Length: 132
Image (cartoon, rainbow, N blue to C red):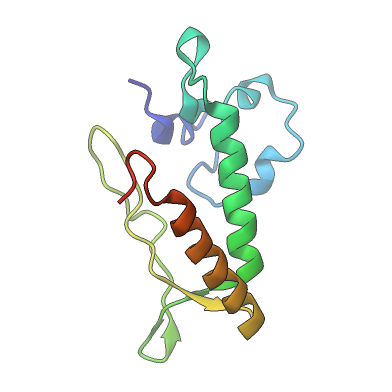
């Protein structure tokens, strides 16, 4: 099993692996970094055949979410809550602690469109195998 978390913190490749620097992947020339792009989908012969469908689905979902909502921090004691960047589970599968945030509709029109689209999606999904 591949530990992506440990790969991304390899000091030989990422001297500052714990720092949040997404720009490190913008103009990649180091061949060691080019292979990290889609590592979550596996490698070589065992790579996930649905990788591109999944990536495009996530892209569309995130674009729509960011179009409709502002993603804001939770307010605690009058201050924005800032999560600990090192708050992860450590086991066979590592994952970040639950992120606490608020989604606020960008406008009443955005809220109306989002609600209408959600209702339409539920109608279309009703009756499909595996739907609730």
